[in-house]
Length: 124
Figure 1 (cartoon, rainbow, N blue to C red):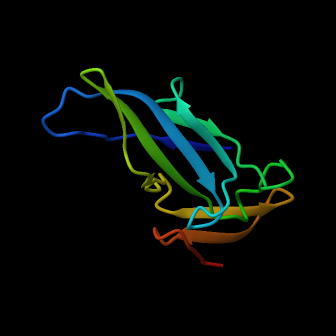
Figure 2 (figure 1 turned 180 degrees about the vertical axis):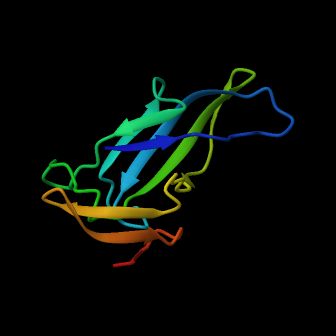
């Protein structure tokens, strides 16, 4: 499972209200393959708790061994007119400072560090 948050969104000089958010998850940096999406989602406006599925099979991806990318699009109501933003690629916020243990059979076998550009470095 992945949890994506809409943390900050601001439109200057506007009375805009967010009415829906479109979410997409991909294992390709250019989003040529969409692994899961929720378009014009009126329920999950501030966050989306999603399973990342393997394209074509529908099986859940092992997030320990795959880099995922997320993007959001804001749908807003400004004085009765519905507008939509461009796609915004999500910024990864990781409370572990980007380091993650890879485990196998309950034991830590490796540690990776998030390079904050969509790639990871193996530390050991």
